[in-house]
Image (cartoon, rainbow, N blue to C red; front, top):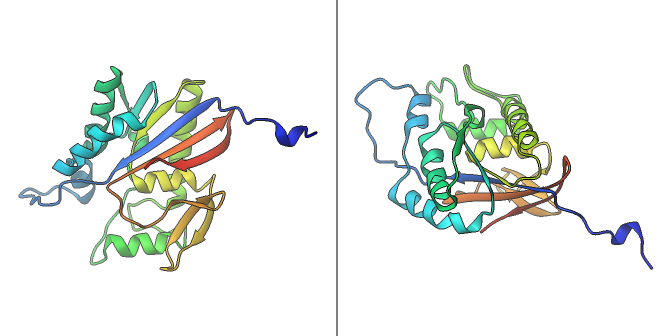
Length: 213
């Protein structure tokens, strides 16, 4: 006979983290928007809109939260329409702030931050700061919506920051940061059209993390 080791894990709450990465690229700005303003206002591409329509049946949540980015809201609206739910906008769920690039690029920033979680450009956020911001915001959301399934439409870097606390850290063959759960890669540097990550809780403890394809 078996005792404690045979007890079934009870899932009390499920959190879905969604990042739609298909944004419109062929845009020229004639006015002087900052880098952050451009990122906040950048809409989904046509393919991104199609991905947003398809994902609605992959999620089973009864509470919706979104960052204030145009791409996140444009993705959330399809699930909100499908389930007849309101969208709660929370700016603390936004993407990591880049800061002043100067003659540097975002790829360089990502590479440096994956090796030093406190690294950031002037005016930007480090991964540790993103992790702290996201964990505070999501913990409040989960407490407010206890025993409900929640979906958050946010951004890949923000999701990475949140999951730093719960997943094992390592590097792939390309020397890029990966986050794993039970030896399964959950976050890596591979560019996907859309990321959907399912996090399951028993009370406040994370008991499972998986990718929804």
